[in-house]
Length: 365
Ligand SMILES: Nc1ncnc2c1ncn2[C@@H]1O[C@H](COP(=O)(O)OP(=O)(O)OP(=O)(O)O)[C@@H](O)[C@H]1O
Ligand SMILES: [Mg+2]
Image (cartoon, rainbow, N blue to C red):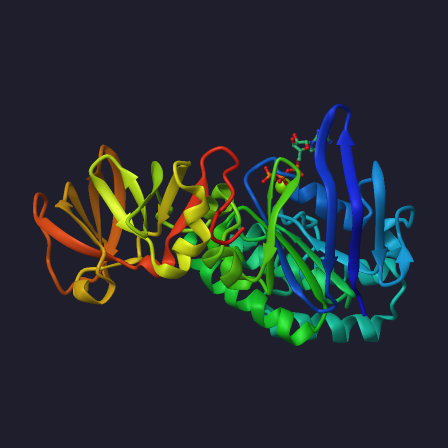
């Protein structure tokens, strides 16, 4: 059992507030991902769980026990770092088994655990090699193996895949997910890669400047971002943003930017009408348009394509709306050329409206 609870935890490094009043309940056996840009406090948060950093304020609990002053080796956590930190002069077998040796496991038990981990990570044939004789992906597996054999209640990972090339990263993601399933322990995983977070997490914690922006399942975070930062941080290409205002006219609620208008659905209008006259930012995800079924949604973006960006299975169109550059994803059935005139239906059930000043999502916040 390992539930980890942050109760109003703050961490200062001198004058820098690396983590600011963090309240977070990490469930037993959950796969929790800490996501955010460089310097937002992810590693600091992970290190506080590991016991590698002191807290400035607040408490951390493992189940019902406060662990603020518990040394790392008593915490039953294992950590995998971005730099694999393998012992260069030991072979793979000894690298994986080293922590067990230090903990005075007997040789037979160590051998069983090392071979079992190596088999699960498909590196059994590499046990006699030194780290310098391994590829990046293989080294990362050794680092995972070293953490696995400890059979910790909490598995901490700090950007473990960021040194790998793109293809390997995707296959390792799947393996880490498998590992979580088979180990049945709590995983806390740090990344600044939104795709990694969306693929791996049961829940994502989005952080910025040491402050939690939103906690939720990948779907909640992507579909219902609470503010402009969360909306912009997730999505590739990023969400399109248009500055304009809310207009209420003849029982209709619209977004207006110059000559461009969008009628909100009845459901959204109910939430938005009270902001008539407010300056807002409209968010349209690139995928939330439809070229073939314009009649279904009934709200259009008509204009000229500046540039077509073919992506194999789909195409992205770059266009301008009232001077702002936007990108939309369309299927590849219709082959477009630069300069084509297109008419895209906007899915008005998936729009986002952010208050310009507070940046809160007025529909979902
Ligand atoms: N030992 C330290 N001394 C002083 N400031 C630190 C120290 N460690 C981190 N910081 C500061 O605390 C803040 C959070 O750092 P942290 O390493 O937790 O960020 P991060 O989200 O892990 O970033 P990255 O994605 O770059 O690894 C940053 O502003 C950083 O400069
Ligand atoms: Mg970090």
